[in-house]
Image (cartoon, rainbow, N blue to C red):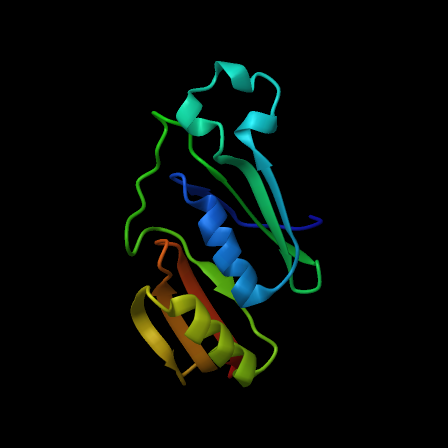
Length: 141
């Protein structure tokens, strides 16, 4: 397998989420709106400015976080403590703290960044867009 990259679905706020994620991770953003796609004239007007695809290259372009907005009538239901987390492995304790402080701001902390039996720094939380994250630094095993 060459790679595995998370692909998230938003209900019209993918652009705001990815503008926020860029402040956390840096990297370059690629955006394509539904209005730029073939056949977009058949889509409802309220979907035209939504993002059909957005990608943020992170971790030295080795990983890509991707997403799109759902179209009208195809909205997704996000739920706290759902069946997924985007797991991050920072390169240092300082980076773990920086990412945690930025990404959890305005969100819901499930487990604050702290030492655990298995890691120097570990946290679980949902960001202000409802996306769930784990930070795991310094494997003790």
